[in-house]
Image (cartoon, rainbow, N blue to C red; front, side):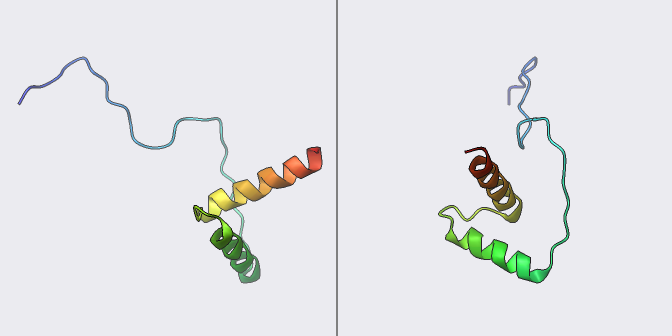
Length: 64
């Protein structure tokens, strides 16, 4: 087996972006409503992605 030296391997995972984690606790009614919205999406995003989409849509509507 040949060992390659001097080559850097890319790390797995999300690309680095300037982000900050936001944690919220929600009542089950809100979680169930969020999950219902997720089910309506073609790609069925996870909860954090659905929350991002909801916020982005809201902001787009507010900014016209």
